[in-house]
Every structure is written in C-alpha cells, then in structure tokens.
Length: 244
Image 1 (tube, rainbow, N blue to C red):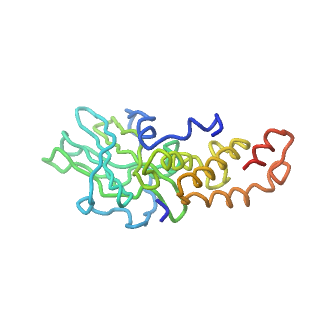
Image 2 (image 1 turned 90 degrees about the vertical axis):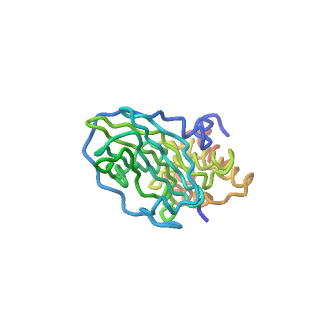
Image 3 (image 1 turned 135 degrees about the horizontal axis):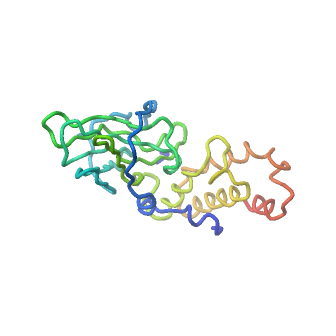
C-alpha cells in the first residue's frame, strides 16, 4: 500500500532528522484558515485517538507554561495533537503539509478545539498524514494558542514508507516532488534529474516501490520542456537527464 549527487544530500533526511529540522515557533496569532477537505486512507480524518493501537510522541513544544505534543499512530499513518498543563479556553490543532512544512494549503487548524471550562488539557481527533489518493506525502505539526500567542512543534511524520533510514530518505525527498510540475526541490531542472535518479536507485536498493510513479509522471510532464527530449543548451544538464 502507498505508506546521490551532492545537491540532493541535504534533502535526503531521515524521519528523525526531518522532525528536528524545523524548531518549534512562537508566532503572532492570525485568523483561522479554512480546514482541508477530509482525507480517507485506511481510515478517514477525524478518527477517535482512543482507537489508536499506539501513541508515539516524537516532538513537543511549550507555550505559556503549557505543553504541546504531536502524537502518532504509525500503524494507521495518522496523528493527533494535545495540550496539557493549561486552562479552559486554550486552543489546540494540527497543521498538515504536503511539502515537508514549506507550505500548508488551507490546512491550518485541523481538528481545532479548546480545553473545556474547568479542564487543564485536551486533544484533537486523528488526521491522516499522507493523502495516498492524490499521492501527497505529508507531515504534521501540533499547534496551540493561549491569548494572542501561538506555538507549534516541529514538523514530523509517521514511519509509514519510512521504516528505516533508506526508506525515510526516499520519503523525505518525495516531500519535495511538485505534483503540478512533476519536478523536485523548487522545480530545478537538472536537479530534478538527480532527484529522480535517486528515487529509482532507492527503489532498487530498498525494494520499496511506493514512489516509482514519479518516473512516468516526470517523463510525461517534462518530455516537451526546455529543448525537448530532456535536452537544453547545457551539456551537463542534458547529461544528468540522460543518466536518469
């Protein structure tokens, strides 16, 4: 089921490195964005965390004396957020990104909820990390708000398609795969060839074929780009594509 060349080494992050790469942030409060459309994989978004067979907690953050925690159900590739040590009215939610945390499209405040009056902690419902139906390779972070101050944990993901450092590297790289242009890492041209080669080599080495769809998609979308047939005026660019 779905879940190097030097310029790409920084992108080939393990799950643990990805989780630590972006520190928790404290931000000025902004208006809530519209929630993402529900995603259904093994289960649909808004599943009860009480049904999770596990509770892995890879990252956390502090906010005005409260603790924000990101929880994962790796078996079902879902996550949820919690806030503890607080008071009634404290807010907690999830952000979901399909590009390693660079953007999150309208997905701010998934499962947005508040600590009930008289309580000191609360949690969201569970949400999917990935969107296997549209080949979105995702990450989550837990966020909270107290008064006008917002804090978030670092971005992290489940171990789905990332059960060791090799498969985690491929999954981290696929977070940079642009589902519109079918290129990688900011839509660079020759670096797209490097990235695709890395995905092919990784599939050969690990036996994980979850991302081999990128081969045909990149070919079909870009065969007519630049000079056509993956050529342009730079011999080294064309050479990288030749190797891919």
